[in-house]
Image (tube, rainbow, N blue to C red):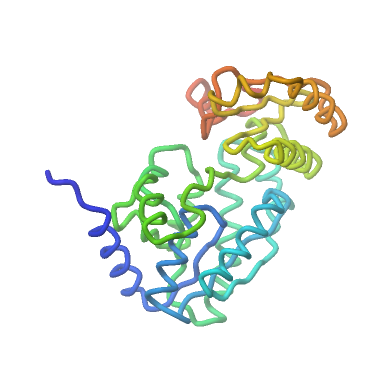
Amino acid sequence: MTPISILDKQHKLESGIKSLGSVLVAFSGGVDSALLLAVARSVLGDGVLAVTAQSPSLPERELASAVEFAKLVGAEHLVVNTAEMSLTQYTQNSSDRCYHCKSELYGKLQKIAGERKLLRIVNGTNLDDLGDHRPGLGAAREAKVVSPLVDAGFAKQDVRDLARKLGLPVWDKPAMACLSSRIPYGQPVTEKKLAMVERAEDLLLAMGFKQLRVRHHGDIARIELCKEDIARFFADGLADSVQKKFSQIGFAYTTVDIAGYKSGRLNEALKKGPTGKGSSHV
């Protein structure tokens, strides 16, 4: 079978979005939804509204980035508050946490789409997302959310390739997931924990590290860095500086995972147990 070129996929994406008529883009600010927003704006013009959910699980840096990108592509952009932290099903942090978050989000988006007479809600899900544990996909199906990147055959690398081709500044932006994903299943999600993770990751980003996670294991912070960055972390007293600053944030102990960064690391624990409830999964 002859591989489909990125140009062909682009044309299929544009055609698919155009057929929707008008759309509300669930815009997180990541490269997937950013590409979707840019293409939708170019195809549908003013028939596009970007909406970003603001909550304690979204880092302030990501919200600022989303606002900046929407301005760059000339899209109307709303920021709405979501209340997943008020849901016990979310804060108890079982393996279906994401489902309850997305149900809360899509409920808000359906109301806005109805008020603005936008025909469809679209998200930035791509083909690679379908292979991981993502309960939020079920919430999207229930809300009849469309995934144009999936429909056009886009995998993660395709998204980056087209974003680069279009000159979008986010084409090489590191992968980002909500801050709650840093807390192992079974350990409650709290605003305090989310704030600690955000401060810790902001500190590492300010030091020049790009792709990273700080996992919250009670009084332990487990840092995941790209393997090529681990040596630099331990050079020139940097590790000692990080440990002191993490202590000020509230972590008694700081560790570095020698396996390096891996997206969805905490989902691996689900393969070892039925639900992931009640285990620290360190």
